[in-house]
Image (cartoon, rainbow, N blue to C red):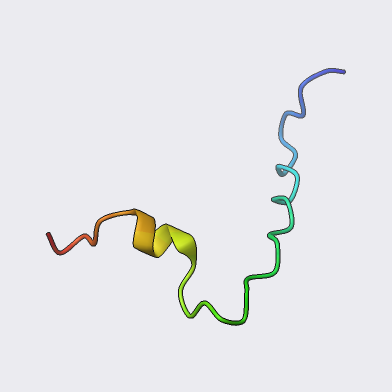
Length: 36
C-alpha cells in the first residue's frame, strides 16, 4: 500500500455512547482543570 498523499485522512473511530448518568466525560475529571 502506498501512502495516501494528498487525500484526506480517514474519519476518526466512532466513540462509544456515554453513560446517561455521567454529565461530563471521564477525561474532564481525569485531567486537572486548566485554571490551576
